Amino acid sequence: MPGEQHNRDRWRRYWDKTSASYDKQMRFFDRVLAADSRAWTCAQATGNTLEVAVGTGLNLPFYPAEIQLTGIDLSPAMLAVARRRAGQLGRAVGLREADALALPFPDAFFDTVVCTFSLCAIPDDRRAVSEMNRVLRPGGLLLLADHIAGAAWPVRAIQRAAETVTVPLQGEHFLRRPLHLVRAEGFDIQRRERFKLGLIERLTARKPDPA
Image 1: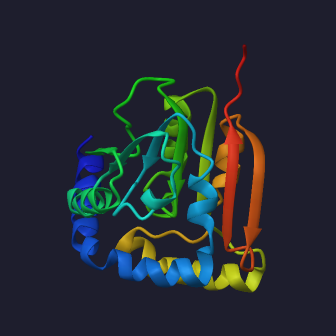
Image 2: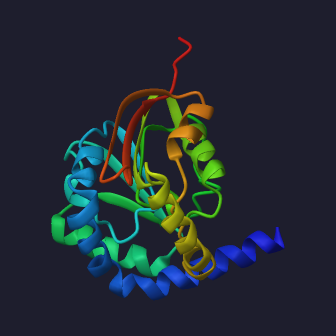
């Protein structure tokens, strides 16, 4: 659709421009808020694994060596940084430009799908989680970590005010709860941790296997 293509192009340009400073911004965020969430999430990946919104590849050092890893991102500039990082790490990973809202993979293709600190900036988080569900095989793992709506109402009030600026400027949402979307898709929540005033949540969820 023309409107969707316009928005996709707009956010691609934004993330291309941000790619040079992204790692520096995230170093502070990871140190102050995210703690060990990247390692916690990625270490659980098994088999044929997809990372949605791989960005500059900050998660690459934390994956088990034996998995088969694919990463997608909307931004070619972010992917270029990720390729350099993969080369420095000696990490084999298939990186390709793609939209989280229309993943270019068949149904039930992956054993694990990972997304960290990215659903907050994907325009339609519900559709993105639905796509992750689609490409996961029955019995597969969905591994998520993100900043979310705070546990206390004063924190949420600040987040709501911040969104009036961050959503139109950079597509950044603070009041989302991926947990609700994952449950709505029928996943079984196996592990859930929430900390830092309820601002960070990480999930391990398994897609039901009718067999």
